[in-house]
Image (cartoon, rainbow, N blue to C red; front, side, top):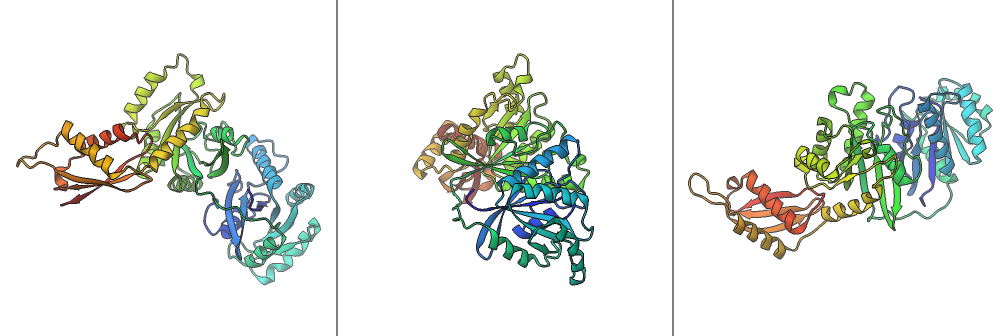
Length: 435
């Protein structure tokens, strides 16, 4: 990243995510009055007086806790601090200076990075007397703020900009393919992302539901950039009991809407559940290119990929254009096939077909299977076809009557276009124009 990096750290429930959301101007990090909500590193771009920087939200740092989840959170916080040009150490002004604040301040000092101490929850000027205790941490720049009400946020951002290194802003490459990794909890999405990124960017655990936010990782493979988004596992609505999980689902949907390609990860030991199909339907409805990646095939004895694929195509008939890859994120088996598949489906998603070729294909389709007549003997006539858009491909059919074009015949026309031009991995859209 050529943009400077600012990491927000602190113990749980001091308002880090609220501050993150205020700075980037959107509700990207999940905010709730529950300790430990943010577990992974969440990235966003902050901007102040024309200067941009990466902003990283982190989980609450808890020292001495032996639970594997908290140990993983600590590791994520340490990684975020190591990659940062500036650390915002956030404390709770209302709670006063606590031993946990002193412990993380000591860790921050050992990083030998530029630091600003942000004393949060100072909602009014009369509360600023609470700040004095925090000078004991030995950090020179201390700024009282209220992330909730945005009090003193401009002063904080002025200071941030003043201490950031002067680096040229990197132009965002429009050629970056944005890939969302989706699926049920515990199917191996985070393990797959970590394999791509070459590090433990997302927190991995055997416990379902570990990833609650979306985590972005920029990966370069053979000279091309891919922005991978690992998302929280999508559960059935009936199982979403916590408001946090509800917002994780919303975040996953929003991530999907911003992506170009979706990789639907299935568990080879439990494929094609109703929830898997619901997620596939969400991808199709939002018009994203799709790849189905069946993970954990190393655990299947006597695995027959042809029989398995036939089974999946029947279960996922509504996205039967999706390429199916059988992989193991644990062993790395067949994972190298994912990048070429992404390139293919992305190219098809952005494909434009010359009008002359389109009309030739439709004329051939009409010749081999003429449209049936209705009860009054009227027959569908297709005068002209043109492509009106891409991502996904959108075709306009100029016809004599919309009511004569039945869904079954439109499916036939779609299949003929797929046979002629490919369109592997992408949905197709049609609009009708009567003449």
